[in-house]
Length: 193
Ligand SMILES: NC(=O)c1ccc[n+]([C@@H]2O[C@H](COP(=O)([O-])OP(=O)(O)OC[C@H]3O[C@@H](n4cnc5c(N)ncnc54)[C@H](O)[C@@H]3O)[C@@H](O)[C@H]2O)c1
Image (tube, rainbow, N blue to C red; front, top):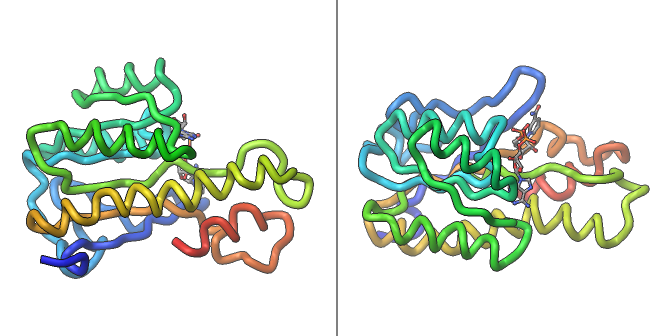
């Protein structure tokens, strides 16, 4: 097994909702190798899974038989969502190295191996470009790009060594809009995904 045994998918979001994901019991269409992978008994990590799109993905993965670890900043919503869907919650700021490590470490302590990572937490807080200052800009890059790279790095070897897995990066349709100043923060931090 090598890292090529891990399927990469990019889920996009736009006015039509999430596209590129179908999680009705199996991973379908997220990539060639692991399409049809049986998810039952495996562990999934969903960053930003306390609410919104991440909570919806987490719920679908639980329905597919996975144990889902929701890693989110929002403890109240995270605890409530985990209780509602039957998953677990870890408070983690994935814009930080410690937060990403906490998320993945929590998942690795589960009995089932990590089969799915959903890098869902993201967005732009505060003013967009060009009003954003360096600290805000760093935070956008840390959340939208660095967190995805670090979480992927931490799960890649265990996934590849144990039968493969699926990594889904929730991106943004603005990632394709690199020429538009108004969305430059989102576009430049997400186009690498
Ligand atoms: N909703 C849309 O129309 C839309 C459009 C384009 C892209 N997206 C992308 O889809 C993803 C989910 O969007 P949503 O609308 O469900 O968002 P949301 O605001 O409803 O939920 C985001 C979740 O991420 C958590 N979060 C934020 N920063 C975090 C951090 N540093 N560490 C851990 N958790 C953090 C929040 O607490 C929240 O629970 C995001 O990546 C977003 O950029 C959404």
